Length: 113
Image: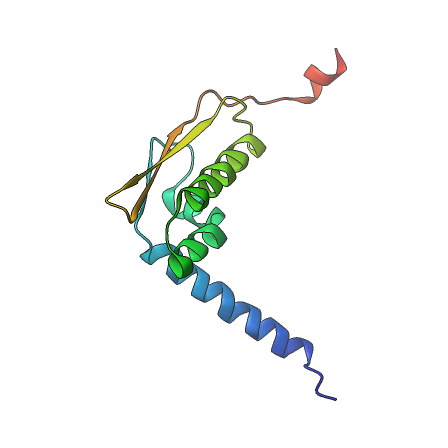
């Protein structure tokens, strides 16, 4: 029976993450309108979707998934009115257009009233 040690699993996971990061950098993606977060952070959030696009090609469904996950990220960070739309330019370039809206910040006092 061939059993891998935890160190081997960790090493393999690091290799996979590094490959996904390289794919995220090389995929033709533009994020427009994002000011609250750095583009590098947003690409990191979308690294699995970008890796899928890199490996299997850009489709409307994959572009829609990327827009959905980017919108979800913003909502988790307090941007309740965020809107992310995608467009495919030239058949292979994904453009995510972000309208951030205001960030809602809730403090302890607001929940106690």
